[in-house]
Image 1: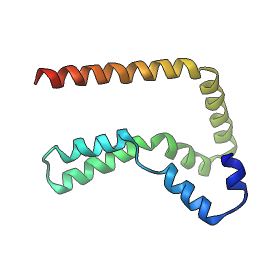
Image 2: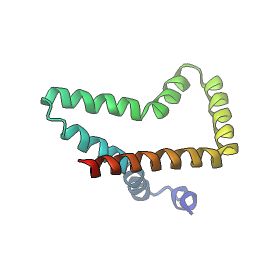
Image 3: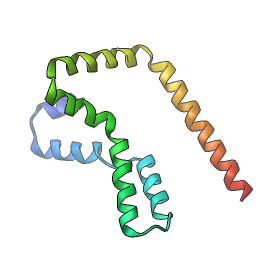
Image 4: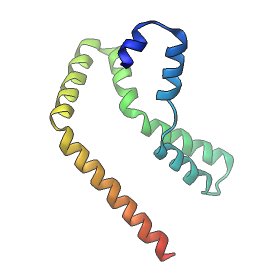
Length: 114
């Protein structure tokens, strides 16, 4: 359905899709709250936000930079990683869900202990 809507070439739909797809997620907002509560100076907060964004977007930025340097090899690597992720998607989901669950339990226990 998304491909059908976007294939119409509507500038308005492309704008709305861009807004929806680029809205900050829970993890991003949680990180900003943590940085805001750190009681650091404004320059230190700015540095933390910049470093966090660089780390957060590295998986997106590296292929783009690599594609500018060597498009053919980058496309091959991206396809290989995509194939691997597709074949291991269930394991990846279990590992991520387990890690998030452990983190949430640890955070909850820590908050109760305070």
